[in-house]
Image (cartoon, rainbow, N blue to C red; front, top):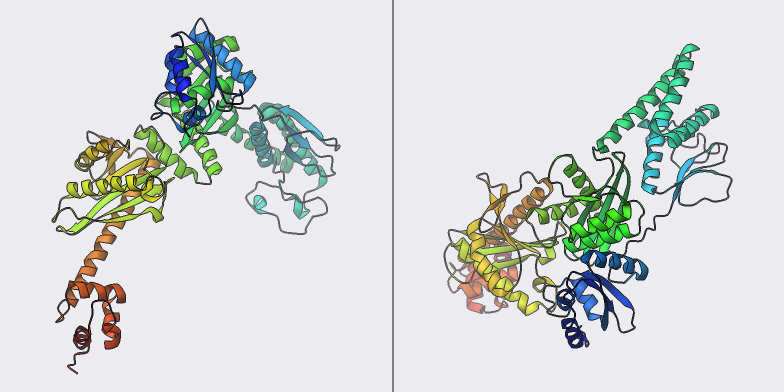
Length: 612
């Protein structure tokens, strides 16, 4: 949609000063829809109202709704950042990334039944139950409860006790030793109460307090020669210590930090924040962002607005990629936190492992949101980072040629969408531009025809009307070099890479027209590329064999007197197989297009060995 105010807005923007400040975009109802800051107002604001060729979809939509803008001059870019954050928090504009702190509080509920139960709830109710909390992290409460269930073997089912004693067999948790099997009726009330009390102590005081209490009880039991009970307590202590060992996996030398990762899928992105205090992971938050735009800008917006509405700001923010205005954002957060806040972009070691863990959680959340599997979302995200792509390759096209010594020269195009084959978009190409064998010329012809089809169908945005985020060619640098001039001449920006095989015909690397990129160490993207390469090879060679077999059939028919290529093709098109042709009678053969009675009799006689 073309903005009718665009010309006036452009003229107004060109009159702005080249000084720092904040700009405030408004719609026709005078509502604030976007707030931003600039080092040089004229340069930044005028970009919005010039060519929209390089604008992400989110910016195009915002600009289409702007009818006017205001601005506020500041003395420095830092002051502009502070003012921008304050105004965003105050007005909550539609096109700024808004991150509500709406998690609320969580409680651990202890029912007041005869056989008490533990659960995680969002609010307290006057029902006679006891509540532990409030806790700011529901994720922390859920994990703590899961640990307590497993250590003390407390049932998590919805069965009511003692009403449901013995009514059914214990569930799987009982047989894998994660439940004591209260439903069997073989656990007495005092034993069950003791498990609940120990779990409550564990939840209130953590590992150390719980272990100390259990150790004292174990020693007392041993002194009165109750070795069976002492052994049970010993097993619980071991379980707690093992659980503590698992937690050490998340322990970190950096005592106070947030780890932040971004995973994109088309125009939807997901941010995940892992929070560490005292070197241990204690909370996780996920945020889905629509119209995500480019990663650097999105990450910058997220950092600013995430910490505007939060009291806790750690000493270190560990990020999976760069942000804009790092120095002034660091200064802003440091002033807000009353401590030095720094940004870190790890590339290896323990900190990088945390980034990978954060990214994996992020991909899992986004996959669930979009209804895909984690491995699929993770694979295309990893591939985007490996190839340094601007956008996540949601829609990938792959091409391969196939021929036999230059005959029946064909090519196949397959499509993977969100890491899965999209067979409805597969296409076949018969090479028409030349005779003989030339893989480079074949690939040039196919890509050229593909681009031509895009311009014919681009208004449909389906099939050939949809541009791929990535093109993969079965071959090396030669294939890529052959097609790149065609892509560049079209004016389209489509990344193209070749899929290189080893001497055993297995995927080895990805190549540009200049260098190879090893993918062996990137497990998820390696599996994806291998699957794509195998599928496009299967599809292309399958089409080639189909045409070759059809040609062989056609050749056998042309041996019959009076049957040329036209009649042979007509017979095969109608009957599909030689067997069905041989079983047809003269009348049926005569009814096929281009056939006559004489040719029908010739075909019948050929397969029935008769001159009658």
